[in-house]
Length: 528
Image (cartoon, rainbow, N blue to C red):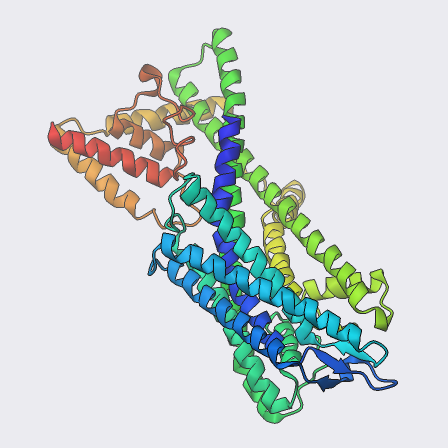
């Protein structure tokens, strides 16, 4: 069972996560490739100046041509994968072609990077340095290679090993739209940078850096303040639109990874909690439990609720741990890179940690900001990943830490200044349970026509609960009514909320489970 669960998780990652990551990072790699093309790869650094103020040195024609070919092939690959996500092109036809194009794009850029390094070595002693476009070329090559490898793994497992269907049909509509959203974000970022670069007379790669920290609301502002009135006017709608698109991307990423992870962890936690409670119930039976059937069925229901609460709590804390680890990785790893790239500014690791942290929190003081030709491109790629990671962490903290503080505050208030609600005694609880069950049973219709009408009416009511978020959970009294309509007698037929065919282990919401059972019951009643 455990091995099957592990294999299922691995196949889910390769069949769902890998193509989604490839689709999401494809547009980012294309934007990096565009930035690698718009500027020469070498600059001449005058005596006493820095590389950011260097003069452009013309690249050989072959470097420009191969760079353009790499970009065109990568864009075609991106269009093909987008069409495959939309099921406009067959998976078996498009994916090999897409993988090949992205691998070729990566290899071409890697070759150019190696060649450019040799060109710089030939100019040793002449104060030459690499431009931002050179570093964008490196990042685009790495991203293309990663994307192609992820898609190849997906294709290998689906078509050659036949571990899952050779298609992207397993992806939900929201998951498929993630690539369209990231494409929109990168296009919006790139187009806005083009407009502002013309208005402010900035280099395009510098404007990409500015537009990136603007849309991510980091707002460093110290190195590229807007000077033109037209730029300030255009910024107002541009920033709003970018933040909206970014919010859609962050929401989709959270739904793709974290929510799916919560579901999987929730099921495992439910299974473990259920096994523990079943052992306790079995022990009570051996001890000749003398409680009534009504008391036992109420206890069974309350155990189900306890299991659900424990599983949900564990899932939320595991999501917090996962997002915290991702946050530490991008924070500490990013700071390490900035320490190296900004060594000309004499940044210590602590300085880089401070800058990375204020950027992650989108504070953006502006007292520290990357100035090197390698630091700015890295900041663009890093921030696109890091800021959404921080947003997801804050969201998970609201589900755990913030809720814990709120509940603790309410508990202190109830013990001090707030009125304390009176809880019923055990005997009163037993009486309430017995009365609720008897009232429901007294109201159950007897004739077949009445049964059919009651089930149909209940289906109509319950169907309205399908869209509830979070999913609706029914009270004990409501559940008793459902069970009586379904003719599931807990005390006589051995049915339980904790059984294998019960709602707890079905993987469905309570609304979906009840609705399915009522529909099956209505079919039997009509065919009788």
